Structure formats: C-alpha cells, structure tokens
Image 1 (tube, rainbow, N blue to C red):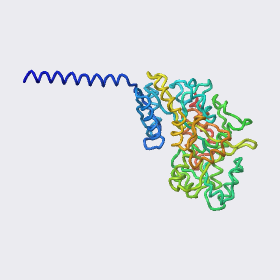
Image 2 (image 1 turned 90 degrees about the vertical axis):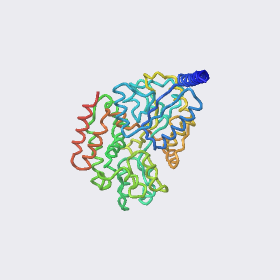
Image 3 (image 1 turned 60 degrees about the vertical axis):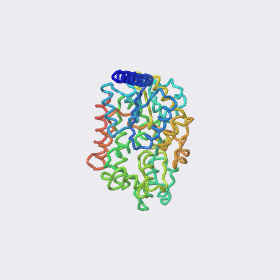
Image 4 (image 1 turned 90 degrees about the horizontal axis):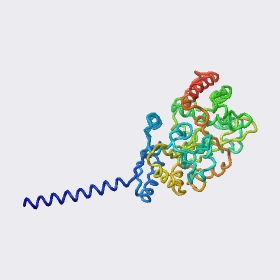
Length: 416
C-alpha cells in the first residue's frame, strides 16, 4: 500500500508539474499590454473599446490587452505617472497628445493608417515637426448647439448667422418670444471656460488679418483681444441673453433647458446634444459653426481629440502595441468606436453612425475647423484661469480689464 501511495504521489507531481509548465509556457508566449482610457466604465465608448478588444484577442491570441477605464482623476493620475515615468503601454490623451504627452509618446507618422487621417483632425494631432503621436479614432467636431424648434418660432435661420453681430440679432429675437437665448451652467465651472474656448478662435486665429496664433505659441499674449472676449460675456449677461442663474445652475441644467426649449443656444461640444436627448428624445436639436468676430471672416467649427490611443516611447512591447493600433484603424473598428460617441471617424475610409446629427455634419462638412483654443494656444494650466475669470465677470466681481490682466499674468507665469 505504501508503495502504491508513493507511486500515486509521484504521478500527481508529474501531472501537476506538467500542467504548471504548460501554464507557464502559455504565459511566456503571451504579450500582456495595458491600455488606460480617460473614459469611465459606464460610457458607451468604453463598451465599444471592450468589444473591439475582444475581437482583437480572437484575431491575436498571443497578445492580451488589459483595459483600465478612467475615473474623474484621470488627468491627475497621468500627471503623476509622467512625473515618475511609470506609464502604461498605451493610453488616451484627452486632447493633449501634442502639448502635454508628446515627449512620452512614440512618433507614429510612419504607420499605414497615418495616411488616412481625416483632414479635420490631422493638424490637431501633428506637431510642428510633423510628428503624429496618437491614432485619432474619431473627431470631436462641434459648433454652437441649438434648439431648432425655438429658432423656428423666433424666425431665425442659422445659415444667416455669419458674425457675432448676427448672433446678437438672433438672441434678441429669441428673447422676444420669452426664451432664454443662451444657457450657461456655471456651477460646473468648466462650462464658463468652455464659452471662451468657443469664442476665442474667432478673435485670435480664424481671420488671417487678425491672426495671433503664432504670437501665442511664441509666448506673446494679446491682452486687448482677451478683453474683447471678456466683453462679449459681460455684454451678453448685461443684455439678458444669459440665464439669470448662470452661476448656480449646472451643465445638466443647460442640457435640460436646451431639450425642453427653455434655452436656444449653448456653447458646449455636441455631447450636450446627446445629454439633452436624455431629457427629451424627440427634441429637434442641432449645431452650426461658431460665427466670426470680424466682418469678412467665416464661421468655423471647433475640432479636437476625442478617442485617441498613443504608445509609450519606453514600452518593451512596441510591435504588439503597433499591431493593436493597426487593428483599431481597421475602418469597421474605428467606425464602431466613433459611432459610440456619435461623431465622425478620424479616418477617411471609416464612416461612423452620427445618428440624429448626420444631416448637420453633412451640411457643415466644408466649414473650416480649428482646434480647442486652450489646448493649442495657451500654456497647460490656463484652463482654470479661463474658468475663474469668466466666473468673476458673471458675478461682476471682476472687470473685463482685470480678467484680461489676470489671463496675461498667468500666461506669462505658465509659459515655458
């Protein structure tokens, strides 16, 4: 009996050892990659990424993608990881692929998909030397969001809104029918900063005769132009174009007001339309290019990164990462992720489902597009100043001159 037990134990050890060896062999043959996204787990775009990754695993069983969805402190987390140079193999850059993350990312302009980038997103993700650091899966392209039913009642056609003067005229007509022209949810401070991101391009960069973009990039801040911008916000508040609770209402309040027809316009990305449709799925909503500030200039759209993936320059798994990005760049996969955001794909041969906004995207396809102003032309960190000075104007605790001087002070301090 003792001999039998000894034989069984030896056999068990052999079998177990063989199994462990097999498992170890499998692990050693698998390349594990980490992908961090700024999107939270509950967002539709995260689900789309998960589905594409599942297909990637089926097609590439030797590469395993570990997806880590974002949290509200994603930006702070990535800053700490950059400070310690402890970064994931791949991550999403939430609008900052060039200015903030490029020194940590691998140039990718030699990849096949780089020749297929949408013309609206290519300049946004390309630095001054021509390097591209991310695969832009889609294009965050937006203008002024509006309620079509309200404007029809007010007798306003967005095709006629070429300048801010025209827009002021439309606001007067909207106000005359008892509707708030513009809603700002200033309790969420970013909504105030967003107004400047929408209005600033028309003052600083869209008109060649008044272009200051190169000066900004070179570290020269035009204080007088910012005072013009601050003056727009002040004037809109004084004329009663803004909701009276613009500092106590929220972004969600803006979306609801737009949906139910309590407001005509909002200065947010097209994500506000998706949010508005959660309050009223039948609301007739759309967007149009931001009017020009100077006579003779053209209205323009705001474009930027939405879903992007870049590769850490120090990753030990370069080829596996590039294989994954090539898989993401397959038109059907890019279209699935872009469609989950309801925005155009970032590749010319991928057509996403833009849903209820399809007609508007088609209508404004030829409008010039410019990047998010703060991301492209202001030093990192200026966003908070844009929000706080805007709130100061709305609360009348700060003059337009003081707001512009504060912007200049922080610009000079943060510029490097």
